[in-house]
Image 1 (cartoon, rainbow, N blue to C red):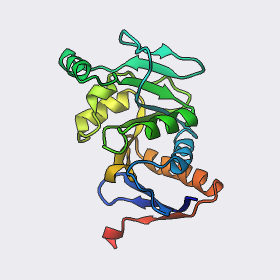
Image 2 (image 1 turned 90 degrees about the horizontal axis):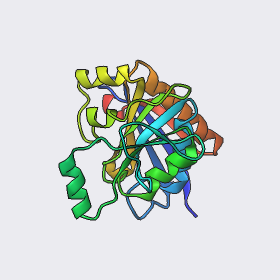
Image 3 (image 1 turned 60 degrees about the vertical axis):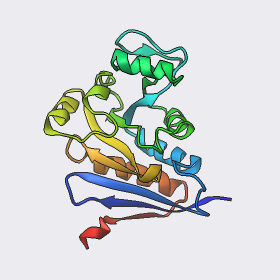
Length: 211
């Protein structure tokens, strides 16, 4: 039976960034985020934040705004060009949509049920839990594998985004970067609290490369 040995939280030297990694014994056979980790991770993310990420919804919403789903979740059409939509349709790929939620179970399901987390094609935008969601256009401002430039950060700030979460190392870890000062550290505190409550060992400290 798999169990968490430790959750490692590190402060990165470059900028207001943090590295979150987990260790499981025995190690999982595949890359990605194991379900036993995803539940705790998602619970930490939504403690005080709304999570807006890439998901799927059938049927896909149309138009350019958010659509209310059963419960409190929201979905919107992914803002992508006509060429990309045509390519996806010809390849038989499901059309991704924007999802915005404060439900940990929804977050955990999305980041574990498809390959976007393990192949680095996922990105999570965090904003204040009580605020309206940011515009779906943020997915064009900052795509999963793009760098965070000052211009992009300025747009994300205007949309109410406080932090960005990206998978790393084939989904075995993630990087949390503050858009607003201190936001990433708050997210890591919440993840650590959830991990300790679940009985996981939490190790914190600076990036080992700095010592």
